Image (cartoon, rainbow over all chains, first blue to last red; front, side, top):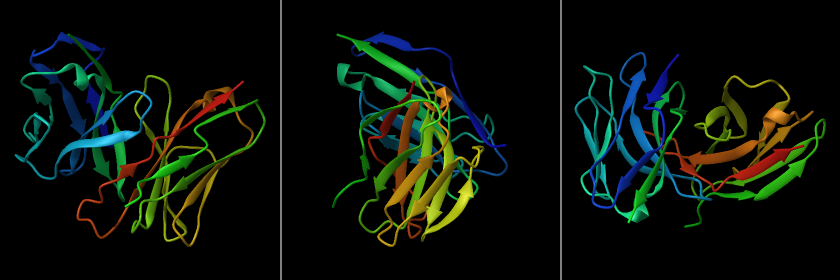
Length: 111
Length: 114
């Protein structure tokens, strides 16, 4: 079935460092792709999306490009802040408006 | 515009008990989806309700059931609780008038089964 795989393990980096979180997907067709962020004690918030191949989603300095040739949707940010510390989930939309999520990556930004 | 709300925030139950979780959808949304997020994992789709009817179900046993009401709020019921049911339960509302049906998530209910 349709699924998403995120790179293993937490990510710890210093403020102003470059962030990359890898995400690959398996799907029939070309599903819409999303990155969600979950701050401590809160629900999921949509960070950005891409609905077709070669689309670039962007928000709050984060970017991700829908690459059908590599079935990837990697999240990047050029200069992270302490406030970016959160758990990040890659997801795809499949079937009848259902989301399939990756396992998530904890990002810790150190001042 | 009121966002998605869930109640209660936290809940502790024992094995074999039954639990009901509640979700109020965002204004104007007619679809509610429920997800289970185990500790350290991504959310897993449980089921979805559209206009008071179940509209798709994930790989969860029948003891997970739900309802949607005329005002589009929803309940998730879990019978015969097991230890593995301990998780954060998230509901998300959406509107099928949106081209990609963006789902708006509530803060979740943390269920602990002892």
